[in-house]
Picture 1: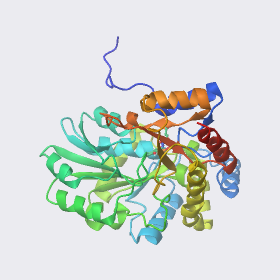
Picture 2 (picture 1 turned 90 degrees about the horizontal axis):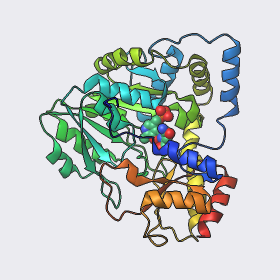
Picture 3 (picture 1 turned 180 degrees about the vertical axis):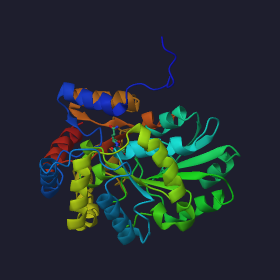
Picture 4 (picture 1 turned 120 degrees about the vertical axis):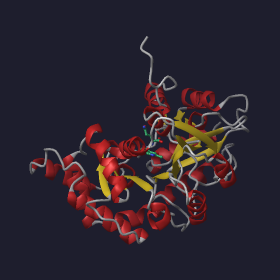
Length: 382
Ligand code: PMP
Ligand code: GLN
């Protein structure tokens, strides 16, 4: 046996559930990805750029035109002025950006505060940097951060705090007030912030996303990460970006240039063209996904699942405690997939220590109307 550097890591729940869905022929509402294509013009543009010969390495920091478009977008949406040459880096997926940010600032023995339930790549990335995760729990009723608990968890070794808003898996949002609280609590400490905002455009009911880029005090010490995969319905393109002040960007790029060096070239050309020609795409996303959320929730109204419509992301949590309280969520997700043909994600896997008695599954509603109707029919029959 090789002594593992990640002894607690197995196969991710996304792989497990998507494989089970494929094996059993279940509708796959587990792993978060759309079952529809990205915009036609964007897809055609990739083909054109491939044929035009844009097939060699992109610049290490990302194609200049794409970094420029990202800077224009964050100026327009958040009023944030960022220098595309020294503050924006294009990465192969938000996942790489998260990994590189963590490696750039976390040293052996450093503590990193993460809020459970959280996305599964944070803790292994911290472990590989030699850091130690301090897991704090979000309030199980509304997935809000308890800032007093956070204040109590700070130590001289705290080096980084990882935020995720809109939040996967709960859809909860951080408010400007949350960001103010955080800024105040870490003001005189040597602590960085990694803000995972891959669902920045998926915020509903006319609420505005509280972006760390718009918070001057926090941004000075922050990495802000997003994903073109989520925004343009092309998760398989694994293309994302990270925005950070110049000194942090310099350190991040030192890692990025040896993890992958650069992102995929023709995708970057196509995204740059599409962003320039269709800035309205992102403006239409809240209404586009809110309609899917409302359809999904409306259809499940007649089911025995209980839920509060999600505030953001393309995930809906549902409580099944009235249906099979005898099953924990992993058992329930397996049972639903095998017996009822709908695959979901059990959220206990996003915790270091699951909440006793919690009976929640995560559904992904980034699906065609037809898929959502078929799934709801099965779920309402239980
Ligand atoms: N962070 C969160 C919260 C996510 O849900 C995802 C989705 N996979 C990622 C990061 C990774 O994004 P990407 O696919 O661009 O690597
Ligand atoms: N982010 C996606 C989710 O939460 C999955 C990403 C992955 O498969 N690694 O479902």
